[in-house]
Image (cartoon, rainbow, N blue to C red):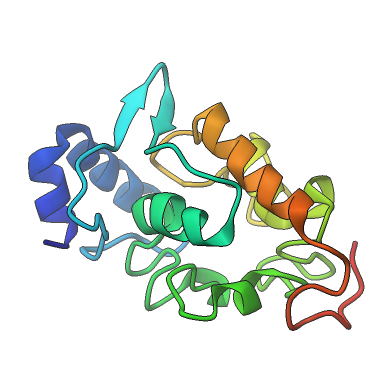
Length: 170
């Protein structure tokens, strides 16, 4: 079952978040297209977006985080905001050593360096650089355990990882 309506039926707060996000334009406006993979474990807890437990691996981030919090149709799904498709089969190519479409001079993920990775800045800072919205926009900040997963994955990458290895890190 997919679509934000299906998710909203099982997780009532999502309906309110989708409405709030649409009103805020969600970087590019969210539409039906949330992908929940049949799970109903997404919830808001103490102001955080709490997802299933994840591992600091790209495969885990794809299924636990990107699919549930980022893959809305016009956010980072098929019609990706700033060209970042987090549900793409080649998501590593989209992220690692890849120039940030919304932020000239930044890389989406700098191997081994979360603090200089725009992806990490976007999920940890209240006012990240460039299009300064904390992600996921309209759903609240990711729970600290999820942020640790993202950080751990970035830290596990070695210089030269990814396809954009010639890009200069910021």
